[in-house]
Length: 640
Image (cartoon, rainbow, N blue to C red; front, side, top):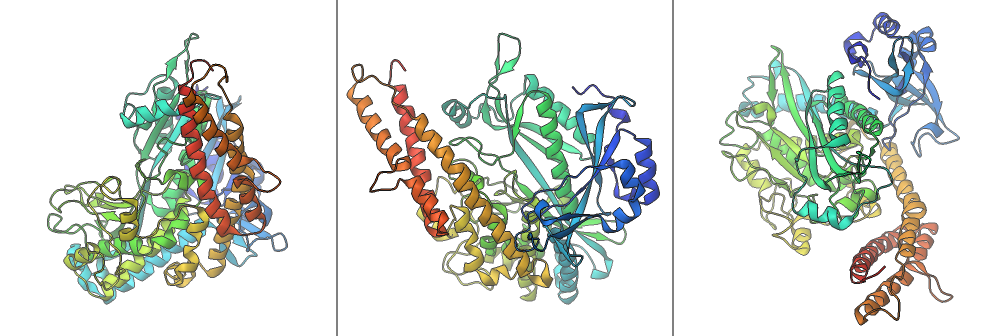
C-alpha cells in the first residue's frame, strides 16, 4: 500500500522556488507529478481541484502564474456574487505560500515506481477581473489590514511597547499573525456501528485518552505522522483522544469493530500558511487511513451522545525586529506580574466583546451545534480564562477561549479558541478573530490602558461599567463552567447561546455595530457578508430538509416493537406506549394534524426560518428522549 521510496518523492515547492525556471526544473525532475491543480477556497470553505496536465501547465506557465485559469460560478459557492448570470471567476495562484503535492498512493507511475502526484497550488478567486473573493482572500486582506493598523496604533501610542521590551516602532520590521490548529477526528472500520453505551462508558472513565494505539490504527497514525513530516509540517504529536472503545481482534487475525478518536498537532505558521497546511494535512490523514481499511470523519459530532471532535485554534501576534529577533506581543517582559501586555488584553477583549458576530464563522453547521453541549468538553458560553495567578500558569478546559502560557518560553504565549470543529473554515475563523482582536487593541490603546487596568476590566463583575466591555456581562472565569453554574446562570452572566444555525446568523442583524468590525477597510465588504449569510442559510435549510429530517424518520422507523404481548411485563408495555407516542408525534401525519417533521418541512418551504429553527430544537429534544427510552425498553426484554 505504501511501499514506495519516500526519499525520491516530491512533497512541496517552497515559496522561494516559485520562479518560472525553478518550477519547470522541479517538475521535469519529478515526472511522477502528472497534474497541477489551482486550489481556490470559496466563501463556504470548499476548495477547487481541477487536473491540468503538467505538459499543458508548463506550456502556458507564464499566463497561468500571472492570471490563473478561468472557471464559472457553478464551480464555487459564492451566492450573490458569482451567480449563473454573472459567473466569470478566475483562480489565480498565490506565489507567497508553499505549494504541496497530493499523492495518489493507489496509482503508481511505473517508470519511476512512485505514486502519481498532483501539485496543488493555493490560489485566490477573482470575480469579473475586478473583485478578489473567497475565504483565502478575506484572510489575506485581514493580515494586511491588521499589520497596517497595528503599526499606526503603536506609532500613536508608543507607551504600549514598554511592556514588550521593544524600544521603538522603528525597530519593528513586520508583524506576524501566528496560527495553529489541533485536529481531532474519528476512525472506524467500515460498516461497523457505534455502541453508544460502550462509547459513553469509555469516555466517562477516560479509558482511551492518550492510551497506546494498536493494530491498523497505530500503523496508520505512525505513517501519517511520518509522511506529514516529509512535507515539513513538523508534527508535534499524535495521540488517542478521549472518545472510543478498544478494538477487537477477529478470528481472521484482523482487527474489527474499531471506533477510536485521535488527534494530530503540528507546528504553527503564519495565518494564511497555517490554513493551507491544515487542508493538506486532512488529505494526507484521510488517504493514509483509508489505505489501512479505516474510515475517517472530520465531523464535529459523528456519534450522538458521545464526545465530539474539536479543532482548538491557537492564535498569537508577534513582531519581527530588524535584527531578526522575534518578540511575542502578548507576552509581558515581567510574566510573573502580568498575564498579558496591553496588546494581549485588548486582543482578548476584542474577541469576547464581538463573539456574537464571530460565532457564525465558527459554528456554521448543524453538526457544529450538536457538539456544543454541556458535558462533552466543548464550550457552551462566551467567557475566557487567564489562569489562577500570573506566577502559576493554569488551563481551564471549560471556557470558550483560554490563555496558554509558559513562563520559560515567552514565544509560547497565545490564545486557544476552543469552539472550532474540524469542519470549521479556519480561514474565516482566523480572519474574524483577528479583526475582532484589532478592535479590542484599538480601544485599549486609545484609552491608554495599562495591563493592570485591562485585567480589571476583563475580570469585571456583572453590572459594572467599563470603557469597552458591556455592563451586564462577565467575561472571565477560572471555575468549572459545566458543574458550578446552571444554564440560567451561564446565560445571565455570559450572554445568550445560539442553538441553531438560524439563531447564530441572527447576530448579523442584532449587532450591526459589531459587524462593522469586519468591514474595516473593506476586509469583509457588505457583499461578502451577504454572500456568507446566504451560503450558511442555504446549507442549513437544505441539510435540515433533505438529510436531517429523513435521518430522524429512519430512526423513528427503526424503533420497532420488540415484545410479544403475551410475553411481557407492565414495564415493557408502558415504555412502548411512550415510545409509540413519540414516534407518532415526530413522524406520522393524520388528517387533522401534521407531525413535527412535516411542520418543519412546511416552515422551510414557506421561508419561515424562525419557526423552522424552533421546531428543530424541539425535534432534537424529542429524538434524544426517544433514543434514551428505546435503549431502556430493549434492555428490559429477555428475548428480542
